Image 1: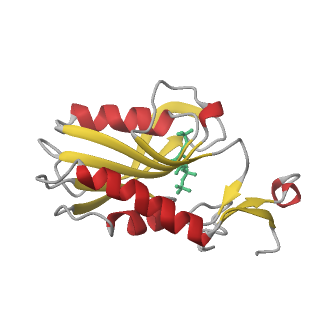
Image 2: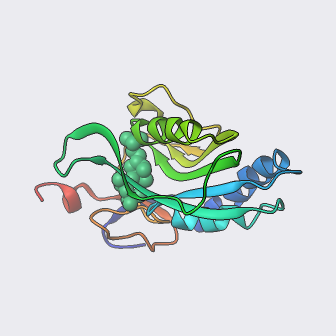
Length: 180
Ligand code: PRP
């Protein structure tokens, strides 16, 4: 385990098996469809790539990078698009694949945006759900793990762009991010 982690929350094996289980459930809904899988950069990349490999439907892949912050640490209350989709979502069945839902700001706004752009359907799949932190009226359609309000890193999730490549999800030691 990385020295900055307090403990492993989800091991590689737990991630592999739960992601496969959820992906196979989602796959059943898209039998005769051609969904557009939208990954939200950057935290979702590892979850995204593991998830889509269990889909048997003919999927198309696309990505967005968004931010809720106007530069400071306080939410600007508006979703900022840093990188937009390459595809037109009009009439498409979209699967949004996200690493974590916290306040719900990102996914609530993103879902609304995709529907406004004319998506036929928008399904939200998350790896982690911090239910206790929700401020916006949105819930994932499928979620792999519910977690408490802990600082998690690895499997795509970062602290200051570090730890994304850890193959497991670990809880970061307090001393790593406190007084920084
Ligand atoms: C994280 C995560 C979600 C968002 C969730 O992204 O990937 O997009 O925050 O928080 P919310 O529910 O309160 O909106 P982050 O801004 O850390 O970017 P990253 O994925 O590039 O690490």
